[in-house]
Image (cartoon, rainbow, N blue to C red; front, side, top):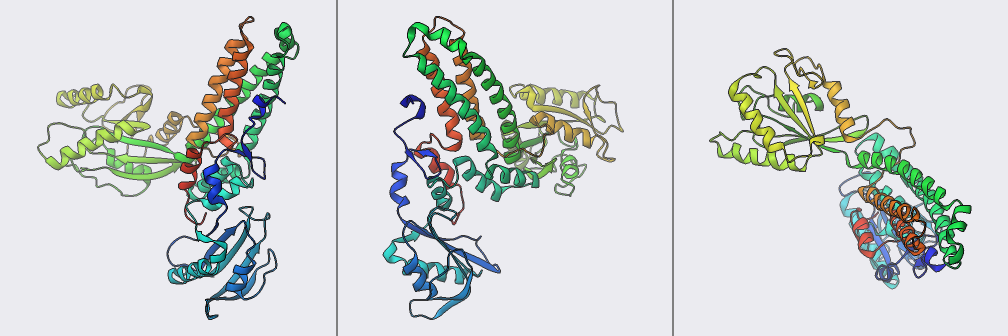
Length: 479
C-alpha cells in the first residue's frame, strides 16, 4: 500500500492505535502508583500500581506471599518491619490482561485518609527497585491508550462517565466507552482509506485517470461517504450536548419574573423573590436536566442603568457578561407593564444592546399571562399557575438542536465535533476538485489525506503530544 495512505512513520500500540509521542514514552517505562478512590473517608479505599516490570518483589514485600492472578486474597498489608498497616483484599493482574496492559496490583483497604497515605507510601518504598513513583492525573488511562487497550475516544469516555451529570449522559458515556463512537469513526475511516487507495493508484497511470475513477465509482463513493459523515456529525452534536449541556441566561428588566422562573425550572426556592426592584444583585446559577440534557441556568440582576446602588451596578455589569457567554438568552417581558412608556423605552434599550447577540440565541418570553395578552407565536408564561413552562422547556431543547434519538446515542466532546467538521470540509473540497475533469488528482488525493488525518484525531490515529497532554491532564489522579 502507498505510504501516503497508511500514514507510515508513527508508532503503533498493542491494540492498533497509531501515536507519535516519544516524550510520553520516556515516562511510560516508569512504574506508577496512586490512590484510585476519591479523597476523604470511606468504607473502602484502593491503592493501584501499574508497571511494565514484574511486580512479584513488590507483592512479596507488601503482602508477604505470592498472589494468584486475578483472584482476590484477603491478607494483611505489611510495613517495612513486617507489622500490619491494615487488612484487606489484594488483586494481581499480570500483563497484558489488565486495565493498563501492564502488570497491575490493586490493594483494597479501609478508606481512611491516613490508612491510604500509609499504604501508598509503603508501596512506593517497597517498589524503590522498580522505580515506583506517584502517578500523574490520568496516567493509568493514558497507558491503557498507549498499550492499545482503549482508543482515544474510549479513554475520554472514561472521564465522561465519571463526570456525567445526568443518567442519559452516563449511559451515553458507557456506550462510547464500549466503542460506539469509535465504531462509527472506524466505518468512515475504512471507506475513506478505500477511496484514497483508488485515487492514489491512478497517480501511476495518468493517461487513464478519469476513466479509471469513473469505472470504480470513486465519485459515487465520495458522495456516499459525505452523506454518512453528515449522519455521524448529527449524532455527535447530540452527544456533545449531553456531555456539556446548555448555558441559559435569564435576562430582562427588574421584576419581570426572572427569579421566579429560575425557581420554577429548578423546582426549588433558589432565588429570593420580592416586589422590590433590584432584589437580585448577583448571578444565581443552577443546573437542571430536561430529557437528560443538562441546562446550566443563570438568573441575573435586572438590566437597568438608572440605579444609584453601586452593588446593583456591579450586578448589572455581570449580567451582561453572562449574556455574552450564554448559549441561550431568555429575554423576559412583563405583560402587566406592556404599554407603559417608561417600561417600553427600557425594553427597547435592552433590545438595542442585545442586537449584536446572535438572534438564534435569544428567546422572547412573556410572563404574567393573567395580566395581558402575549404576541402571537411567542412563549407565554404564568409562573403563578405553571402555564407555559412545558412549552418553554421544549423550546429550550429545540434551540439547543436536541432531537429525540434512539438509545444508541453516544456521548461526545467538542473536540470530536470539530474534527468531524474539518473532515467534512476536506471532503467538500475533494468533491469540488473531483467535479473538474481536467483537475490534477494530486489535489484530490491531498484533500482526502487531510480528511483522513482529521478523522484520525478522534480515536488517536493521528494525535499530537499537546492534545494528549490536555486530554489526560483533566483526569483525576489514580485514573
